[in-house]
Length: 432
Image (cartoon, rainbow, N blue to C red):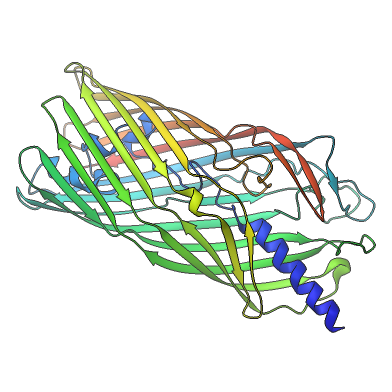
């Protein structure tokens, strides 16, 4: 009996490790770059040097000093997020079946949702300014569906890596700006990250035993809060050229969660009632540039680096057991190019394209991280009303590549690619 308990706990831990490692798998590793603000219309290109509205309090607090002094600047955004992720298994896939049923493709795992952000900035005087923002830099919702018409249990071929996940982070970021002279401004911020985590994963029969109905492990109500430091600079090189840069340190969330599990065949598994799941949100650097080629047209560019190579394993601790699973991630790079066009009148238009490298190879990729190298295409427009209120809309199409999976283990091998793997971000913003 004791041996069965130990095996059961190990199966649960291993299953959860594989599942939660990359559950918040969005752009550029785990980070989101869409907030519904005007700079999204340029795919984030030049976001840290535009300094044209309150969103600069998040992108680059140094830009607060370029806003109208002695005045509060506000912006509120709302966004609809429509993901679609459809996996197609290939020859070579071997999975312990749910009873006598073969593994299925899992249908469309995307779950649509709504989001939004809030930004405030105020240049207090000619030397100092304050800012505050509320937004989410990482979020995910995945739900793989069953192709099994005989049993209600999930038969997705990657179910031992993923069935459902919900992760949400909220960043509260107070910031301070300081103008050094006519050309240079500095910014400092303290991003405070609050996160919640809920997930489910199937539990297979231990290797060497007869197939049985899968068990299930659930981590729920996981929460944690962490804070780090961010530094930024903005250089007004000339009347037409701006260059900016920013660094943000790592935030590490240790989700203290409720843990429950049933074993294969439906029997109870004696596991601790709580588990800690640690997910690091790694350090990043950003470089932005803009140049006014005319009174109406501004060219925008960005280059970014994210230290995902530091995410070498995921830790789950249950008090009795601590386990880690290597994942072999690597640093990612982002490049974005954009255009801002301000014709005569009240309209301003944006267009942009961005590219992110992949953080993981196909041999290490699992079904809980359906992203590869990423390509973004964005459009946006804003209208400035006579009372000083700006209203606008942004649209981003993000393609996450085929995210090919070719991994193996004692519970089977998943081989295949995502025939559809994209997200649409539709945002609205109001600034005053």
